[in-house]
Image 1 (cartoon, rainbow, N blue to C red):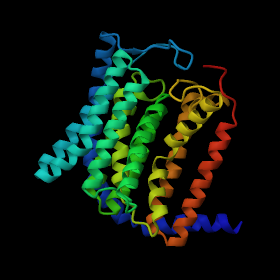
Image 2 (cartoon, rainbow, N blue to C red; image 1 turned 120 degrees about the vertical axis):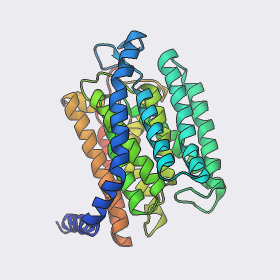
Image 3 (cartoon, rainbow, N blue to C red; image 1 turned 60 degrees about the horizontal axis):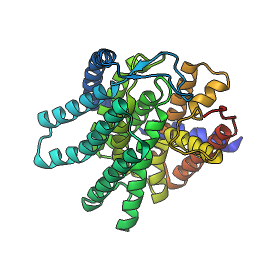
Image 4 (cartoon, helix red, strand yellow; image 1 turned 90 degrees about the horizontal axis):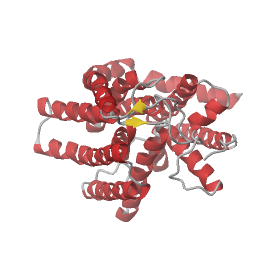
Amino acid sequence: MAFPRYFADVFCDALDEACWSQVKVFAWQYLSLAAASFIIVGSLTPYFRRLAIRNEIYDAPNSDHKTHKEPVPYLGGIAIIIGTIVVAYGALLVKEYSAKNLALATSVMAPALILGLVGLWDDIRNLAPLPRLLVQTTVGVFTAILLIETHTVGVPTGHPWMDGFITLLWIVGITNSINFFDNVDGGAAGTMAISSIALAYLGYQGGQFFVAALAAVVAGSTIGFLLWNKSPARIYMGDAGALFLGVLIATLTIRFHPHTLSKWTSFSTKILIMAVPILDTSVAVTSRLLRKLSPFQGGRDHLSHRLIRAGLRRPVAVILLWLMTGAFALCAVVIPKTSKLTEEYVVIGALSLWVFLYFAFLSTPDASYP
């Protein structure tokens, strides 16, 4: 009983040290960014829903891995893209405009926009997995080179080739994780909102205001979209939204430099922020490989599907995924506020929980299809 009590004390002490006055300053400074993107995305989403219906752009339940019964319109991702870009550049022009800041914002937004447009094409025309992966890899290589050349990799190893490989793997992996995770009403949007809030606070706390500001914008955009995407979903973000958000959050997290006392816990903080989408992709891909299926083939082998098959109603399954995301995000938020030994305990405990969940979910039976 000593270790659990010690672990709980660590969390309480860290949250006390966080200082509520600092939280209030963070809220006032970044709440306006989140509120602006929330209002824009929340207002635009029903318009794009009507546009999708008028042009018959639907996610039809025409394959075994689809879980919805009726066609659901796409194009929600366009609202997310517009809201995020408008607020990000609007805030830049109003408050922090400079050629350097403009270039910095564009270095993050341009790759996300490119993949968002590729995703939109996929929503409308259905792209094969290979061309989509090639574009993701190209964007990842470009971003990795840019980050290394500008010395903005969050946790550099000291070896440019290693930094480049880790950055490329992270961007492509996280982008696909968010895309894979968008498999249940409100799942991806809610999880992205929680992860973005945690990243915004960590960025603010660590003096990385660019990361904090963009993460706050993403949080507002995803919450605004969630109004229309929660169960039962009236619109989906589609690949346009999932790929845009995926590369955006991947770039922001790889830029983020946690102020921890050891390098391995520093990189672990990024993993904890994205722990649930990574878990979902790991379980689904492992399951497909064990069944000798393509990892890119759709299936009902994601975390949400397994929870629903276990007897949970769809909204309850989604809330459980949000709670899991919140728990890992809380660990990430606590880490920079503790001693070296304590932060290592927190990371080991969180990663141990992740491993336990991985095998627990993997042990649940897959659907008999595809």
